[in-house]
Image (tube, rainbow, N blue to C red):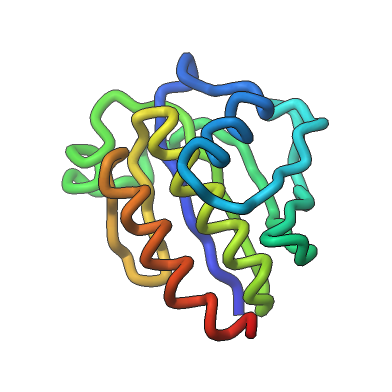
Length: 143
């Protein structure tokens, strides 16, 4: 089973990987991202750790295809034009790193997080709360 989390944002707000990592630490999460990548050109598995446990996620950068969105979805995302997708497959540490990275990324870029498995949307402020709740829910699975 795959889990996909999409973050929709304005491309002009794209942070450097180092800025993203600093935001993760500032938010109080114990996740280390591999910061040696170009966030526009890179596509594929991005290694990360959660409390020294190997994890990571598939990372995909793309433009929003507005023709595929409903009127409700278009209203949710406003003029945001870019999407980064975080995808994991059947590994709780990978899901943990993916969810935390996506939550912090959303907050950092003033984006909209779409938890596609639940079909829920979170604005930039609610994304950090979602990330903390997701961390608490997954933590027992790692013990």
